[in-house]
Length: 168
Image 1 (tube, helix red, strand yellow):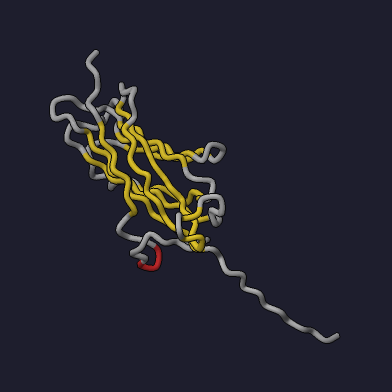
Image 2 (image 1 turned 120 degrees about the horizontal axis):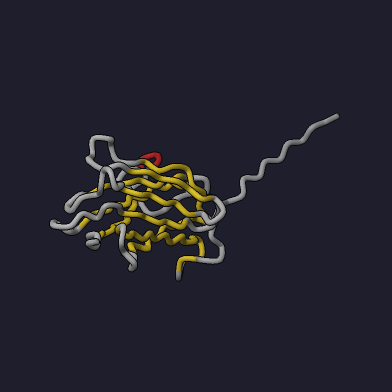
């Protein structure tokens, strides 16, 4: 049995963000989109499958995964395990393998759930930071390829107090 090809993974902030955001600063409650670009590096050996594992920070809440268009030659699937906060994405199968030279881009969408008070930006206590990495393995791989961390900044939320006086 021949070994599968090697994979590469590049994780970045997606070029399309909520409300046209072009920075790495996200408000509590805002959506952040991560782009995961998976490649089968071998030109002579298929990867068969490429499995991406993305464990979300406790300050992030999973929303969804966008998968490549169905016009690609391989299949793909994605699921989320809430107990471990893990997104698992699989590109390819035995029937429709992830071939040498194939590339697939997935977008993981998460909501900023809370301000990361335990992880402030050094020298900037008004912002917390949320790092997020992902890893990928080919079918027969045993050493994951890690990409990241991609770090977003979250400003401290400001209380919005509203007082209403009622007379009885």
